[in-house]
Each structure stands twice: as C-alpha cells, then as structure tokens.
Length: 502
Image (tube, helix red, strand yellow):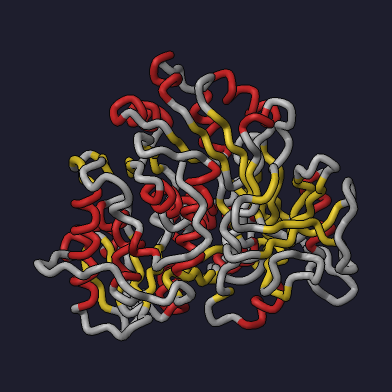
C-alpha cells in the first residue's frame, strides 16, 4: 500500500514509481511500461513546449480515451501549461463555451470531433491540433514547478448558469492521487479499468492514483455493460470505478463466475448507492471490496466508507479521506451535533484553487474554515446537507441547490433551459430533476409552447438531440397554458417542482 506523503510534488513526477519495467497502460493498442510512459509523457511535453505558448496558457483536449488523453494530464503541466479536459460526450455548443471561458490557446482533438464544430466555436486565438500529431523526438524532463501552481481546470456545472471551471494545482492532483491510492490499498499488481471520463475529477484520478501506486490502467470507452465485463476478462482488471447507473447495468448482465471473482475492488462516486444495490454488488462480486465515496470537484473527494463497514452501514458515506477534514456545519456557523443535519464543509490541502475567473461564485462556496477546524485556511462549503452520527460516519441528507444529478452527471437546470428556449418552440420553460431508481434523477421540463404542444415537443426533441449530449436530454415534457409566478414576478420553481414530483 502506498505510504501517505503529505509533501506535495509537481504532478508530472508520477510516472515511473517503482519498477520501470512494470506495466503502466494496457489497451487495444498494446502495452506500455513505466519507463515507456515516462518517455511518452516527456515527448508529448516537449511537443507542447515547442508550440510557442506562454507559461500558464490553457491547452484543451476533447478526446475519447486515446493514449494522448491518458498522457495529457501529466504532459501539459510538465510543459508549464494548464490542461483543460473536455467531456467527450459534450456537443459543439458546450465545447465552444469551455474554449471561450478558459481562454484556451490550443485544442487537441480528433478528426471526427473537429468536423462537428461550427464556425465560431473555436476562438480565433485558439489553434486546433489532432492528437495523432503530438509527436516529438525531444524529451522534456520532469518539471520543478511550484506545487501550488495551477495545473488543470476541470469544468463542472453549477446550480445556475453555464459550467464553471474548477482550478486544480499540482498539489491538489498529487495529494488526491496519494490519498486515494492509500485508502483504496492499490498495489503494483492491480489493474484499474478506467471507464469514467477523464474530464471528471475522479475519472482523471483513476489514472493518477493507479500510477502513484505503481499499478496499471486500462482505458475503456464502452457502449454496453457487456463491453466492461469483456474488458475485465481480457485484461485481468482488478479495480473498477463507477457510478450508480453503471452498477445497475452491470448487475443485469450474466457474469461468468471466474470473471466476477477476479474483481478485487469496486469504488463508487457520482451519487449514493441504495441499500439494495449495495447488497446486489456484494453478492455479484463476492471477492471485491466495495468503497462508497462522496466528493465534490471543488475539493475532489471528501469521504469514503471502509469496506469492512459496508454490510452494517450500507447507507453511509463514511469518514474523511486522508488529507481532508470534513464536518457538518449549521446555518449559524456552529458545528452540528451528532444526529443534527448541517452543511458539509471540507477543509485541507485537497481544497481547490477556486473557480476560474469567477470571484462571485467563489465567494459563495470558498470561505475561511470555521475556527474549530484543525485544518485552517480556505474551506469549501458544499451546499449539501449531511448528518454525522455518534459513530463518526456521515450520511447524506439532500442537496441544498437545484442541481440535477443524472447517471453520475451534475447538470445545471439553467443550462437546459437556455437550450430549450434557444429555438422558437417554447415561450417559457423550467427544468426539474425528478427521482429515478435507475439514473438517480431524470430531467423533466415544464413549458409553455408557442403553438400546439404536440408539434412543439416533436420539434424540440429533434433539435435537442442535435444540440445536447445524451445525458442532458429531457425525459418528459409537461405542457402548461401558463406557468405560475411568485410574488417577485419570477417563475415559481418551488411550486412547479412540488407539482411535478407529486
């Protein structure tokens, strides 16, 4: 098990830990040992350093799980640049927003994706390069960057408005990798099947924590749950990170006993597991340790539940991970008593650098840690209500904001509404998350149509299939002749939500 090291280093030092001949990557393209990984990162960093960019310039990547996608989180910081990974499921409008908001100087993508971009999506100051062109005969050595310097910006949706960029330092990424590798007890002979997008904080951490422990990674873009099962069998994967909708799909597949028994570790994030799902996973994967976890991109990961406690506390989100201090805090600023609900507040070195160029939203979430915290400095006020029991285990109560969480994705209702209202079909619209056993939540839209509702819905669904990724598609429409308003003249979202969920 990797020892805890509280001293952060530049994140680009990760490759090469342990035996340089040990396997680092295994995929359909072959294998790469740690010596080869170090060389490949150095070559890619040399290429990026030769592109005439200034230190701290942003390099965006919009890629499937190619080798380049695996290497860029290390290569870009090594070149003195800031990596901005973009979710490969996003469509051109969302990509355009991230490129403009981040001020990206370079976009690394693939031919098929580049062909979907519309005129004006890529700012004039941003050049496009295909991932296959990232070749250099030079090798750039590991950096001596300040661990507190900006290394990456990960975009995540807020409760209002468009996605916001969360700034992560070298130290954030390094200590997050060490923390997870330690409490998951990852060993050099482990193989992590990476199915989560690398644009997600935990998706990227699949790479970094595995390499920090000297283990190997298997990047996989899958279409069906059977693809995941086949990859576990083919590559001998021992570790799988997922979100509740993926577990539901995997539980519907008939597994060969040998393949199911080969899995040693299941880690869950992006939504709470139900007690029923916990029982089913324990039965289906009897040799696997199950790690329920809770996290927010603003502080990466906050809590995990030790596998030894899962059977007796399947509803719990556990205790603080290494390098984190978390507490439930009342609205008056005092610490909540055991059994009393409060907002989860996270302090310590995993707290990110804040939101990219958004001081107003930073002030809402990033504030000084209460004086009763051991770890002082800036803390993240999550907006999520939790209860800490007398046993020290946290339990999730509910979300304070109106974020929609579906299939492990945090979705801004405002962003959905903006796209719905961008056409001529609808006059007014409100997006609402409604509980769903399979996806966590599904998106409902309450709207007033311009003309016959049936015609409006048909046209709207066709347009949104073009303009929004699958996970952001509304599942149901509720048509009204008029939408209710509150005393301030605003649409009464609370009333609409109650009526829709009734």
